[in-house]
Length: 451
Image 1 (cartoon, one colour):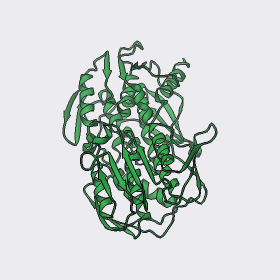
Image 2 (tube, helix red, strand yellow):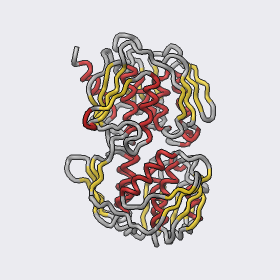
Image 3 (cartoon, one colour):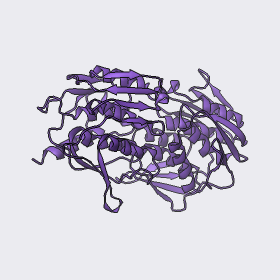
Image 4 (cartoon, helix red, strand yellow):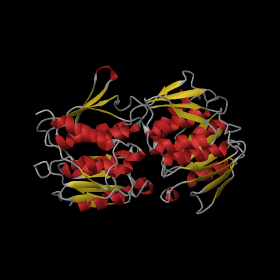
């Protein structure tokens, strides 16, 4: 893979898109499966995992904790030799970068260890991301967690003494990853854990976690009413088959799903499932794009889906609550200038505390492109205006800005194929989709090689 320049002009499509895309494995599933494999007492092989910065950080952290994690052969494949929930290394310094899944999942697991001292830190941006809900909940279960800087933030020092179990309240309103981390660590406690939920809960990722735990040998989590979950400590983590295949990333798919809405044409996405068919709630973004006018159909034999823009079809503005699949909202916001009428996006207040303030960043970039945007704490309303050419999109080190606005740049604004939009720091995509721009270029080549 050739290094990307600091500023990357996006070549517009002068012909409708055509062809097929193979997507990377799901980041959310890969990092959960890596942790759950580490909790098993037999080797687990992950097939088709995501290979990216976030999953590399997780694998390296597991190795630092004394586990054997290795890649075998040319195919994306990771083999993990777990230790049955124990952490072999008596101490470790763990660097989590800007990876929220790695940060939260490792914090909960290290706190569950019977003994050991573990120091966890990340980038300056990671030190600003919310951790307090998880830290408070783990402390309530007996964990000794010491914040070395601002309370409730990294860096942390964990002096492990196990989790006693019992009743605990967690506020995971700022990130569902905190609740997922607690759930995956709960079976390691000395007694069953009853989790009371405070604040809003974004259920799709929590449900993903619960279903993965079942696939790795845990009984179903018992739900008592709307706000209480009970996790037993009677079953070991175990994957009987010894192999686990990771689904294609539904969030990454969203960018290529939006491409036919920008360029016209049709594009197949190999292996991607329709909403409700797999583990990922972000497949619901397909329905959002269907409301905008995209046509989506399943391919035969579970081979994936095909997204097509009907010839002459009108692009419609959309009103959508993204609370359950907010990682996809930027993909809609970026192409909203091409839709007819306003687009209203709600349920996104928590994204202000992700890799960057995604709401404020979207406002700045859309206004830079000449769009009318009304910003609220939890919402954006985008009214299309003529696009400004010769625009440079700032990404704030956030992969989702780079990929979302790159799709908008595929629109042939000038009508002559000349680039009009450039992406600053496109290499930030390494976090979850290192070869995104290579894949986009391949789709461009395929679409323009057929007159």
